[in-house]
Image (spheres, one colour):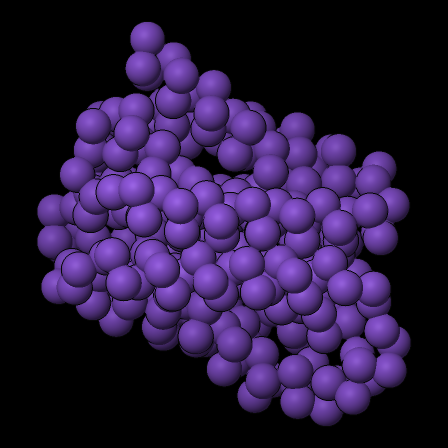
Length: 249
């Protein structure tokens, strides 16, 4: 019964990931609550699942012509370099304070994404945040957080890219290749530490992928401003969820 509830919840998470690039942060708590996995193993299994999702998502959005590799590669390199040290720290630190920080950051990102888009702000941010150095730095910071917490990274990269002027669907598309190296390097560290459930991972991944495909199809039909608002609301909701859950634990 709990396994069926887990798969149903992860189907919804997959849809959110496909439509908004955000949602992977829900998988670790779902695994803890509905499968009984220990927190570090839940985070490690979630990160491995997000690696597969990122590979498939990159292929899907590339076919749609939505990935600019000149912008994607610095994000990918930064995330790949930082994912391993993030997962290494995860294995050695208490996750409690980290969850509080992550929750606050996600809420702030969501609030910023909900603000009306400003072309002037986007133009002012262009020289650095749309350049290779800025994209690499952001990729490294978010990649480290991804490895540290077991989230895919889109929950932070998508609202940030929207804030500095990227179209919502492009921000979702760019979050996919970014997550490949970040989640791969982090997963290698989790395998080395023994924080991966090999029995649960295949079924979990298939369910999330189905929901993801469904979400990508839906996102292409949602007006950009509405999609931006949905992403902002989902981020705020996820951040509050993390904070409330941590306070109650």
